[in-house]
Image 1 (cartoon, rainbow, N blue to C red):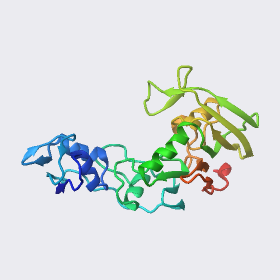
Image 2 (spheres, rainbow, N blue to C red; image 1 turned 135 degrees about the vertical axis):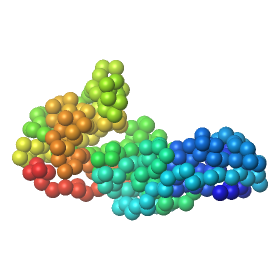
Image 3 (tube, one colour; image 1 turned 60 degrees about the vertical axis):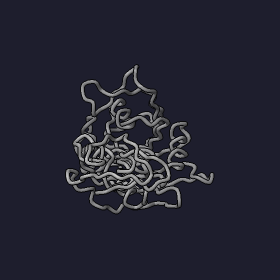
Length: 282
């Protein structure tokens, strides 16, 4: 594949390669440089090699596996700057950075928005694979920065619904327990005094067949925060076997709503309907 720098300034080879092949993850494209599959004048070049306007290089893409299959995800809201997705359980937020690119929210955004590239295209924040619900994505870099600043400054209000094991008391409380990655299992996190500050506000909505349905409002956004906090109070989420929960047909954790300011200054609340019924009877 021949790629020409059609810009009016010099540009890096890896940037040009990504812009012309946004169906692939950046990790997969980076591997082409490692495998010496990118050449200029029959000489292998590095990702940072600058190409002047009008210069070109050749890239052999045959070693990359097929890009993610096109998927169609439910859209809650869309304008010229954002797309709000109703993410189903089982769909990852973005590629894992290997040579292939599993179908994900990011691959959906790449196929929808021309010019976006990279394995995390449009991804402002993440939901775990097994978690369903509201995700807001950015259509351009300006919007990405605008939204991410709100997450960093804790100006975004998130509400989740979870079904947990047992009867939870008291009916309302704040779990304020720091979290860090487990040294024994790097896929999990654990409460620890040396961890990052983490706070979750919960409220019991109902109790049914030995399980409680909770409304959860995290004021921080740590990885696996809700799952770790609920295990900490001895009420793991139904279906969360990674954190001691009972086996179920899914992880009973759903991102119900997201309140955020979109470009233009309007404050909006995006809502996703609960995808299950009568979880207490599972």
